[in-house]
Amino acid sequence: MGRRPRGHRPTIGINPPVLLMVLYASISVLGGLALKLPAATTGAISWSDAIFTAVSAITVTGLVVVDTGSAYTVFGQVIIAILIQLGGLGLMTFAILVLSALGQPVGLGHQLVLRDDLNRTSVHDLLRLVRVIFVVVLACETLGAAVLAFVFVPEFGWSHGLWTSMFHSISAFNNAGFSLYPDSLTRWQTNPLINIVIPVMFIVGGLGYGVLADFAARSGWRVWSLHSRLMLVGTGVLIPVSVIGFALLEWNNPGTLGGLETTGDRLWVAWFQGVTTRTAGFNTTDIGAIHDSTALMFIILMIIGGGSTSTAGGIKVTTAIILLLATVAFFRRRRSLVVFRRSIGLEQVFKVMALTTTAILFIVFGTFALLIGHDGNFLDVVFEVASAFGTVGLSRGVTGDLNETGRIVIMVIMFFGRVGPLTLGFFLATHVGSQVRYPKGQVFLG
Image (tube, rainbow, N blue to C red):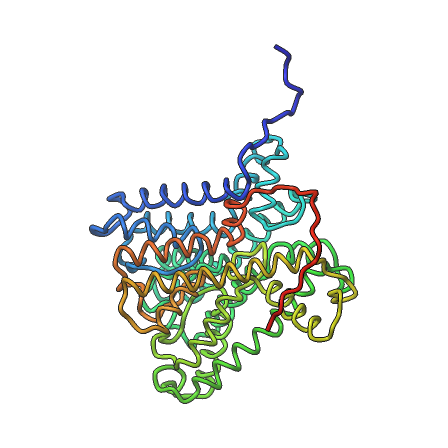
């Protein structure tokens, strides 16, 4: 038999999106097994508790059925932090980093999987992007932990304070929303460092690695990619809208902002809760006490989510922008979509429509399935489903009351919310090229 060419590696025969699903599912199961170990818990927890926590961590969601700080030992919390890091960094990104560190060549098959994991359209410059991701993650999480230590070390001592700083830094940058305290960060709701450092970390993580790579490689608005410019504009609009919207809706609510003594305290909480809603899932006020109008605003923001190739979930900011631009173009009778002197192809518009439709279907059927086994407030259930799909982690108290069927429904929604709704489409669809052309037909719409 002839020898293989040097550097040759067998390609991956399985569809990359399907392989990603298998990887995330496998790590979820392994994480659940690890969290069920006696050394990982302070008392007995069920298999359902362990698996749910593992899925929530690997999908960087943050919904919990047991208190992370009291139910798990430091060893268990380390496992959760590792799962969060793997989920936020991306399993294939982490695998490529390990292969590169070991000096192993990265084959085309692995690059194709990495392309889907990072939601890229090509394999060009993927390895450079992976290196940028690693440097950015390491720098941001280290710096974040160092600054948070000024808050937690004086309060909890060196060992517990440093670990608390590191855990929350990892959770914040990866938009996970996991906290070691049952009230999340509410006890520090007016602390300036918490209100600045945590949001900065999850905003940076939510922009997406592609945008951060643009920052690192090129300087100037005109040379940044169209994606980066759309992300910056979209984020720049959504942040003030969410913060001002939350402040206006909740200013006199005694359960949230109205219960605070000073205007400054209300502004701190409005800022934090406004920016965390799309991505991170931390809270510094009682989410169960917000008005129904605020809950509806939160649902919309959670469905939008953060940026592509980021640690955030949702349909993504750029998807929402293109959807709006396509709608405006239709009403203006334009035959093409142009933004920042760049045209957006019909294929991209179709992808946006497919992604949005899939998201709506997931949320509708997820809500229906959850309502069958959970007789609760309708808005609270929709809120829970949107939070799971957007991998946000905010809850109005539904998570802890879920039965086994309800937990499975939420786990499935979290899973596909992270891996990507289009992955299901890739899994079910078979690409068949057709040379047959049919005459155009007329369908009356609207």
